Image (cartoon, rainbow, N blue to C red; front, side, top):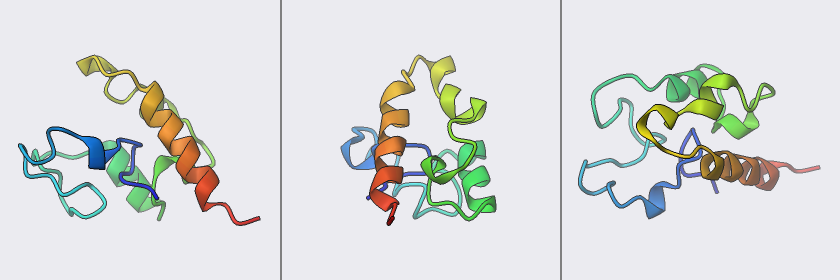
Length: 89
């Protein structure tokens, strides 16, 4: 089951309680009050998460968080896993 639009595993996020985040899937606006382009993109395309997008992984999703020192590989792997779990062939 997916936990976010971008592949962040919200249930294991240590900062979730600190910043009063209930997860982007459950929030209309971000906990920081800004705009998340990944969240907006998924919602405008009626996608649960980026892994469902035919353009996955786009440059925006693939590089998200790198400027803050985060490795995108765990997020991208989570998105691949969630997409595979959601397929009903």
